[in-house]
Length: 402
Image (tube, rainbow, N blue to C red; front, side):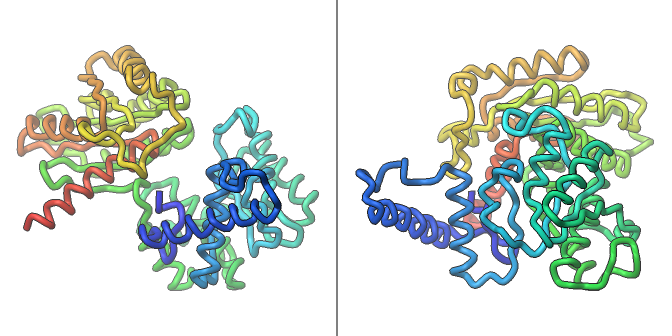
């Protein structure tokens, strides 16, 4: 939860979060009281979830004296609460995908129209490469908003950098980041021309974001975790390609036994079956071993964190059907889908992330010391966050015990 508002690349501390939460909350109630609302403490006097956090973030940044802030939209752009910023220094649209269709529409053109709602008169606008039809909409909207749009091609300098977020698709993001940062600070570096400033290079090399193209060695087994959230068809394909590239770079052509590769997956609220099929097809076409089976073991779980205590409070998602979670409806449907596309994989359904981790470790231990088991964790960001919570709480507990 605290990751949503970061300063100097660190989430707010619990003390900071509590302070700015209640300062924002109390001021809203004071405003409602001044407006003679019949019940100033009512939820009617508060913005909805994302709007509240947006307001709280601005209050936090002003209070902390932040001199430069990167603000990400909630959904879309045209009607997003971040549009309270009427004169940002620069705007940018990252790679578009089909998501939030109930609000943004079901076509890439409709989604592009909404995203371009962040464009402002006289403010430089950038975009990652998009389908031609989407670029056309973005350009039309830029003209309407009295600005110009630059579509940022991949900077050749990026290929000579070991990105901290190490995946092929992150090179597109890095190139866009270079263009946006250069526009913000008034640097003369133009995308694809000249050399990157050393500060840019350092930033790209050191950039980290938990749960995004992240690799971790397990502390309790010989397992390696590969963690990357993916909740759209496009992002799940990118996660699959990233994992496939790592398989290719670390594969052992002399190994006699089939590789032990484990998938932990959940997506509770979108078309989970379509995402799972996309992941399977992406990896099946990319694995370099003699077998096209992407995973030897597949584990479907809910986003519930712990077996005994349930959700950690700041990881709870109420945007799910509690009955479906309790009955493991989505997970059982996913298991049936995977068995159809890959009948040779060992497929399991468990109730919590903690149990999925234990099962993956058991598989890793059974594989033997000669194996180098790999586990990909993808799908819901709530799943990814819960997995990191369990792994890091174990590390903290080990530190206290020693």
